[in-house]
Length: 112
Length: 115
Image (cartoon, rainbow over all chains, first blue to last red; front, side, top):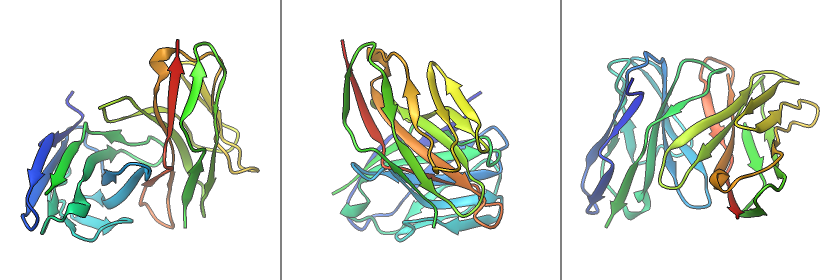
């Protein structure tokens, strides 16, 4: 059982470039979320989804887009990368409020 | 809005010492509460959870009790080991008026256990 799979694990981008961080889960979970982790700031919610075709903004959505065309996949798009988006990104999925989230292993992104 | 506040670290303990990491929350509904652990270079793992008032979550010797009257969910362990060195995150999931299941985190507490 793969759980939550994130690709790539590492990425270096130049300012202004765009890219997509991939996230896939094989647990048939309804809920999926994207977080960024920065030193001293914990994990901040970027976007989340309560099911296929339904997404909403989290705490820090600016500069990021998401879509949820299937239950399994929840890609995160950086439209025009900025150095402030240098961070570790985590994708997570959940079957409901009482169960918590299962996290992927993360993508370490550096924008130069 | 919903929020989680946890004690700042780092917390440095000797092996076999007693651990407490404080966590308090603010929520508008009936949240579920969680502790996650992150080992160096890894993702987050669910350590324990509690879904209603007075519930006690436990796992691997760690415990936390959901206290609605004090809006707290403090993490405790009676005897820590070097292998417990990690960052610990308190989190809540609230319905936020609907079926959103948004997970909100505290800033994390670094625990370093010395032999």
